[in-house]
Length: 275
Image (tube, rainbow, N blue to C red):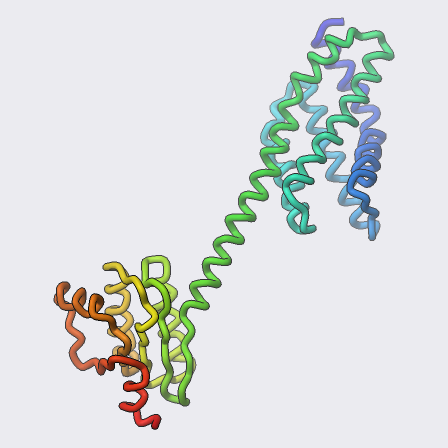
């Protein structure tokens, strides 16, 4: 039997036995991952997923271009694994089960009509790329999720880094810590102004004593923040400015006219008659 005839024969047998293959896939996956369906809906959804897997492999046997379908299938499985707190390693292990079930079926069907094993292996190797695309889909889903979590963590860090502390109904302190850079700039300005408006803050003390590094963008951000506060009718007060930062302001020709500046927060609070 020629290879093309063999593919036609195997695809026909696979199509006729698709339900059996699907059930075998599910049974093997349940045994490997030790899980049971907790509802009929989940069972039906799982059956649909593995029916699609069989169709994709079947399409490969019929020499259809199924690379995109295989990738999307893998991406879907990866996403569902993430939703169930799975990891990439265990998800990829599932590919071994898919291969064992489908390859075993193809080998058994070939043996029934006494096909040479070398010819069967040639067919199997030709469609093996389908499973590689599925693994690529798994990896993409987990990579995208990792990037999403990283972005969420970064955004949370930025929000935590702008903690406006109310001292009274009208006065609050913005203690800046770490470095003021481009990544923090938008959050710093937007969140500060938003909080001042919502809480009706009239005086905001910007404490720079915890800032260890400010680049040129950071200087611009501070200048914009001060200007924006004044436009909102909020009085900005600066405390804890280090010598190198003040020298940078002077070097850039930035004047802080009309801005109250204190060496530390304690002096600022005294100036505001808190004690």
